[in-house]
Image 1 (spheres, rainbow, N blue to C red):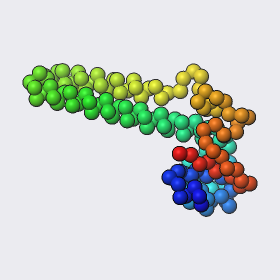
Image 2 (tube, rainbow, N blue to C red):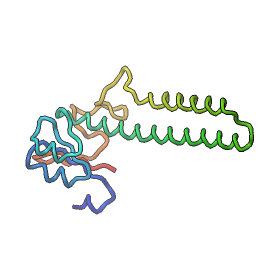
Image 3 (cartoon, rainbow, N blue to C red):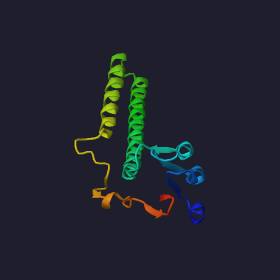
Image 4 (cartoon, rainbow, N blue to C red):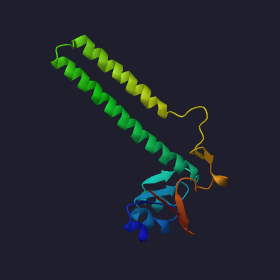
Length: 154
């Protein structure tokens, strides 16, 4: 209960029927695809296999996606503000406005393509280090129990 008092999120990983209440109470519940149907129903995330290193990759990719979406929104709004200011100044034509919109659309699309996996896709590598024997102790603190694995991360 000490984790609940702090400003942190709690993720619980489990695969059995007895893990279902903890999966429902945790901020983020992750169940294994090979586990019980009750655990998969109560969880927020269902892993297709029991490889927890893919969970670390998903968290890292989620952070990158949020950052890219914010970049794209800011870039689009700045471009629209420039077009509106140029329109009120009398310097913008319809052709230039359309060209600017298409150009920003292409730039935003290319910026989003940086999220595509490259040639060296490896979900186990996190921050340039490889997890020890597939364990998941690279970015998060792990508290292991008999029934599951609890991640607490900031």
